[in-house]
Image (cartoon, rainbow, N blue to C red):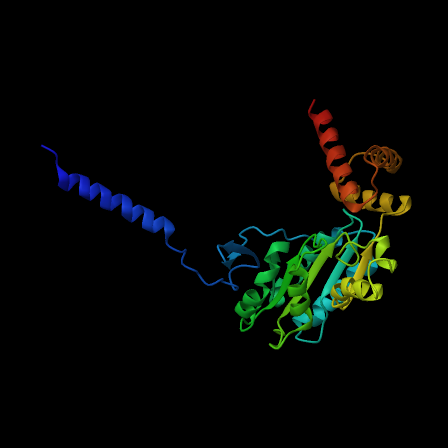
Length: 287
């Protein structure tokens, strides 16, 4: 005889499990007092702020060769955390020269003064109104960090960013700034055809549309590939911090060979070289 009661109970249990899986995740308010860094996590058509339990607290003293840019960004951030007028920041230029590290390093310096960082991906731009609304009344200062930001032709997301940067009918929160990094100076591709009148009656308007986004960042600071002496200064700084048992001549000679091998002279390349050199040296000592 079939036990229909047992089968019915099993079916109810299965249905209950499916309902739990389909039910929306309960939004837990972000705890800005207990956490320093957050990222925006998309959930369907919405999203929420999720704490980063182990943020990268980069030391700005480790950034060598970009002193002028670093000082400008630190000064602007100091004004911001002091509730004084400050600008949104765009850091653009060569990859590996410290753009992202500079922004992350601000957290260690200014977190005790109430600074918090929220990491956004490019595709989170459309959620900016919701994010800023959630941050508006919090008693902290927030940098919305958009790393490696750029837009391709035909993408409309950049218009949402323009609106937040310059403000729409709703006043922009005074406790929120946007710091972005990009390999492109104006965040969008620029073509030779932009300077030609073959396609538009007023080509300057198409160019102006592309420049309008980057113009909304009050501070736009460029990063360039290091000259050889600058690259070696960075290498020396890293080598001194690691206390490597090599002469300056040996370190520089190996660093130049590394730069020729990788075809890069940047802060990232210098750090990677020192990581490789330190590992080789310690392995030889163990052997």
